[in-house]
Image 1 (cartoon, helix red, strand yellow):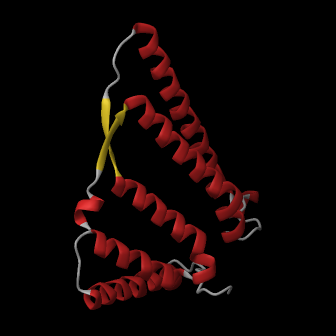
Image 2 (cartoon, rainbow, N blue to C red; image 1 turned 135 degrees about the horizontal axis):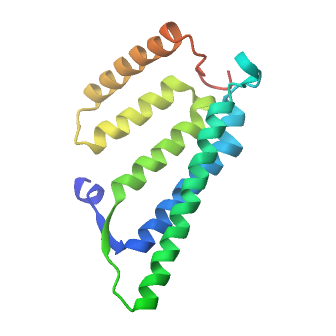
Length: 167
């Protein structure tokens, strides 16, 4: 499994820009159209700011940055073709793609499965990816971290975090 996770691909620099920009654009669209509307309550706080205002602002900045990176990749490709230069190769890691998918899983299922179960599952996967092979140790660590982070978010910060299963 460790050999599988350490797979790297060398791809052209401009393709890395286009792929990375596309992932950033898709992530921001996921936030704008799914995660923020479904997981952050409407309403107004101080100074007529909604609890969604800052997340939306951040998601739109992310969207514009992703679009810029995509256009920059196409610009680099065009310049290389114009001057007949060979492109630089960059290292692209499978592990980065796996962590991105884990983030999508967490954001997509936190309301349905709840913070505790999503967090425990994600932590078990990360524990295994980084070489942990003792299931009970990983489970105990994941549960302990989830309890501590739950207490921090709910008790100390007074945030409402989904418990799961539609609640």
